Length: 299
Image 1 (cartoon, rainbow, N blue to C red):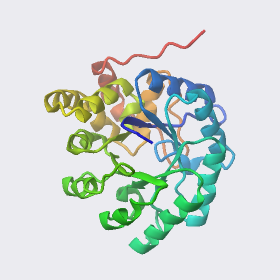
Image 2 (image 1 turned 45 degrees about the vertical axis):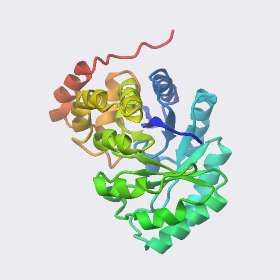
Image 3 (image 1 turned 90 degrees about the horizontal axis):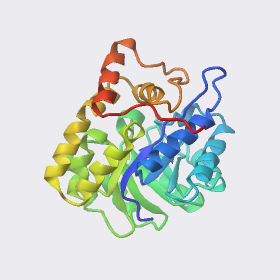
């Protein structure tokens, strides 16, 4: 797929009364993304509290996204688990639910070798039934998918790219050398995504896009066109949002801001808790500075 631009890693709204999926709020969030120009959506990733979803909730959420999107943009499902067997099963569930691609994170906690990672992703790509985007985020998984291993995986016809969340310039440079018509590089780090896209990354898988989809897509368009001056201005305007979203672990701040925008409650599933009151004024200021106001609901 020719994925480019701002790809939103969607939060998952839950109802305060019973901790169930808030599918009406989820629909509003999807519509908000599409109206803001977001180019693809990730469902049930780490921002979407995928690890906290029940077995029946995961396919239900993917199916809902596919139905609401109705083919307008690709839908990616977060299917990475701690074992290859479970990851293949989850990827097949996503495929059956209609997802276009699987976003597969490196297995957390188990710390496989590079050869183990190569075999893991190869087998998921072979057996998962939909194309795969690799996802490397060592700060969360304690596992780093190295460029040499990515190079071995990049030629697989069912592996279409990598979301790289490491922010170092050198890591992005090494990965960008692996680009081809069938394999693309995506930033997974909002604060450095502009730099990555100016250097040749095809887009960003963004947390900030939940709150500011139009601004993130504008940033991506400017970066992909190589307009460094416009990129700098657009990126600077988003720095307060990046800083706020990093104040407490993701998706704590983003869900509080979505609640203020009328796009779901601030409810998270334990062990995550709502945003600390110490950051509420800062969050309100960021929303005001970006000109973001509550979304009007349809009658």
